[in-house]
Image 1 (cartoon, one colour):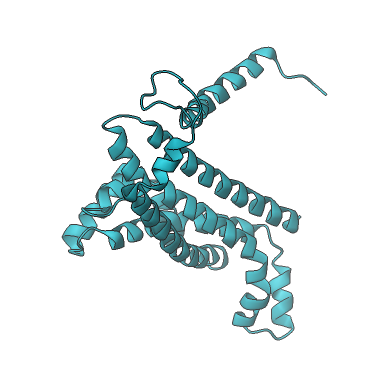
Image 2 (cartoon, helix red, strand yellow):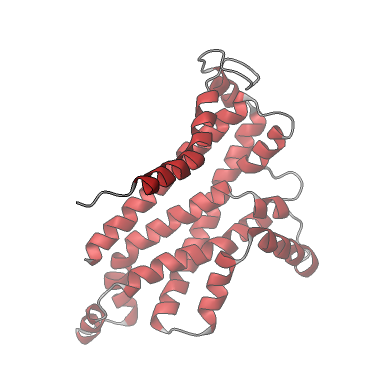
Length: 259
């Protein structure tokens, strides 16, 4: 087996260190027995206890989870339909509509949605506007995953179902949906993760009185980065990691099934 060049290994190690060392420091200092993050004093779990009694943080966490569940559920339904439409009928305009929010810069999408909600819909910014915004940017990710799954499937399976007398709905319910279910679940987990972590679009569409975890963390670090911020960041990082691993396992699972 051919060894990689030393310079390539050093470049890879430096890149990974640049990416992951700040995360490791955040996790480590969430256990620091000091209100200031200037130096390490000692190990403690007090900041996690403080976090569990912080009503504003708990409210923000509840809002984030509820928004993520509602928006990812709706985005999964619409994204699955969009993926099916792009694969089966291949309209030239549908991929443009579905993929554009994925490629669009978040700040541009956030401003566009803000103007649309206020000037066109005359909608008061709040929980509903955040949910609609998260659905908008999540649909494309789900559609891409579902479409990729459909592209790797043998079309003769569906033709065989039709030859045996199955209606289009029976073909979808008994053949298509079970085969694309891992992709649908992976798309849901991806949409949930994106919604839970989103800051920029939420910042523009949340309005007054609606706070999510990213917004709450931002409001706290404007004063100082305390170990409580590190603690909530660690928990959010852990939840995101679990969801990413689950989505990755789902993706590998349906890839093996396709093979």
